[in-house]
Length: 247
Image (tube, rainbow, N blue to C red; front, side, top):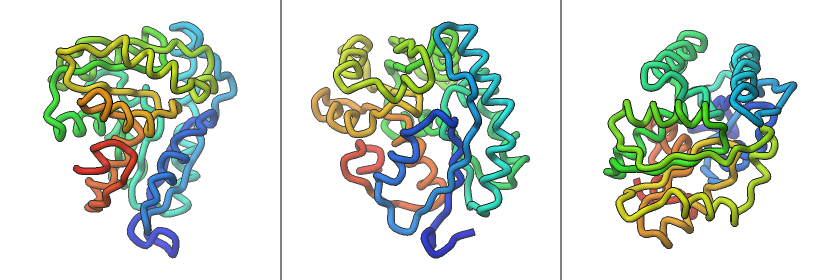
């Protein structure tokens, strides 16, 4: 249901309690008449320094998502947006579809996830051969690569920043992000894709598109773009990459 601050749309946004970037990126877009109600998935132990830790982190997400969804629904949003990406890639294309269906069944609302948003973005941009980076451990990068491969993309390279905790994701600076983009990029790569919603990358991705001459898809920009377009909103946003600026 729309309201005085969101007369065009109110999006419910589900984020880990450790995430400080998603809401910042959405409000930074400055979309008139669009509001957000965030719900937190409680992360009591944010360590993710190896594959086992990362699996345990996902277990915490799965244990707390129903409470986060419950809380957001009290604001009567028009759409649910998953502001945590790893879970939406888990299990490949089928795993993402099952996750989205569970959330639709739970809420009765349309659902936007990072995995589906990146797929839609790359199709919109006409890119097939991609390079991907994340803040994750190898076990998660395998799942991300699996999703993109099953979705019909050619993954030329994929790597993670191997952040030791969930909070450390938001502490990665621009110089390190430029380094990892350079490491995965190549002359045959048609687009760079960043996943991991607590990485602050939207503004830098916009700059890199101009420098590299190719699409650089930041997952928070892609998810907001997909939510808007699926909701029938055609707003253009400057400084957030070509998806939000021209598509």
